[in-house]
Length: 222
Image 1 (cartoon, rainbow, N blue to C red):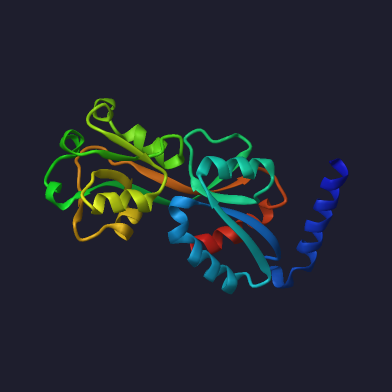
Image 2: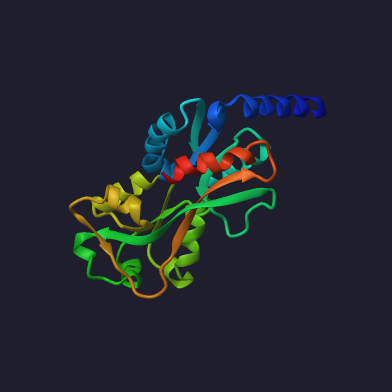
């Protein structure tokens, strides 16, 4: 293992010395949290082709927790994930954006408060062990979670389609709600504390990717 690490380090040194004009060079394995990949991944691939033509990006999608585990194991160089309030100390987080959460409900229930919705409709809840699920569970008062029917799904698209069909309501990041909301559904504004998730670029601390992470961040933030 020690000999392999030295070889990999030498390979990255060669990329540093030979990269033309200080441009990003090499192959990078990047993960995208599935709930944001539909919005971020296409633009990232377009921008990376323009801003880093000498770099190759192998990308995959998954849940935040799984992607972070793969970064820790070394099978990914970095991943765009929902930031945890207590990340692994071996990980470094670079903030990309904040996305607030909003309720989406069938249009006939748009005048109800979020508390009332829990007594009137099934609640479509993103799987609680995921990054988004943890944010949602933290936001919703425990008494509300005990009201009515809860349906657990791991797909933003599936949840929003159910809301559009009048089958229940949901709490999701606003960009996703805006993307999938149909004519028969509405965003329900609520009073009180608003919750949000932080999308971050997660990498290992002090790795060979550290010197290149700022260039990758430039592409992601573009």
